[in-house]
Length: 338
Image 1: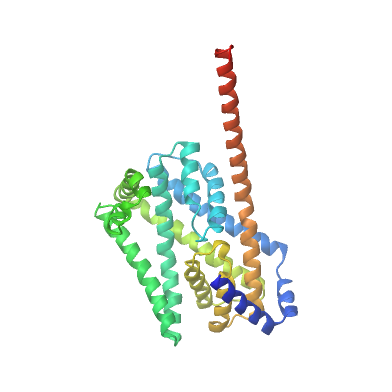
Image 2 (image 1 turned 45 degrees about the horizontal axis):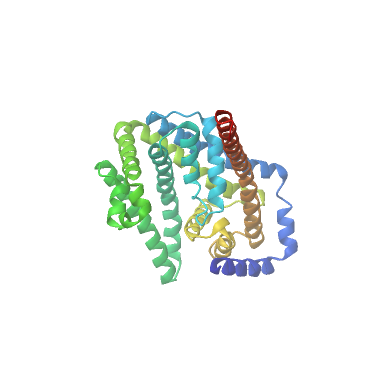
């Protein structure tokens, strides 16, 4: 609620300064063709994730066609958007459906998805470090400097620890559950074997297929590049050509603010736009229009995933009803006196 309040406050202030007519005129520059281009980039980004996960699963001897995996990626993205951490949260559903539909073990599915996410985080850190470094050097706020430095250091340590313990064949996630005292919780006790198998799959992939690792890194880089390209094109379609540094700042602030656990990023984009207006040359009207369009397109992109999820739920309910009816009929035929 705090970020929503602060975000809307900054949003209203900047809206008042820019003027509603200016914002409407800026939004009018965004055409249906521009909208379709951004939607296409979203889909290409999902495709890169699909190819990466499919490639890793193939190395685990669980090949799955991209056309079968892509709908699961759409569902994962839709669920992730409404969870506290907008970029993630739909993974358990995807792992469950990979097991249910295609008999892919939980450990292999989890390992493939975790690897894909970690590689994207690693690539994101490179871009984010540039943006945060610029803010760190130009801002006078000690608090902001401390927050940015702490966030970068935290994720950098996690990434280094992950690869170090994986290369040492010790298993990062098993060690993490031990060192952070998570083993005392029932969930981790119940899934101890699954966690161990996830570590085993990741170690197997990195040690047996080192030549394939650059490909997965490339796919992660292309995925994150699509993310940044979306920002650039939306602002460009609104009539402003962002510099590379401004794009990196937009991306860095978005990635940093996403860490605040708020479903559908309520207030996050608004807060980010308010901060960006203070540290970049992006016009206020363009910044506000950027937030409005980005939120609308992101919401639209959740529709296919939720439609597929609804279809999956209906099919599952129908199958359960069929099984129940079949059981009762079969039981009645075997026991006519009942």
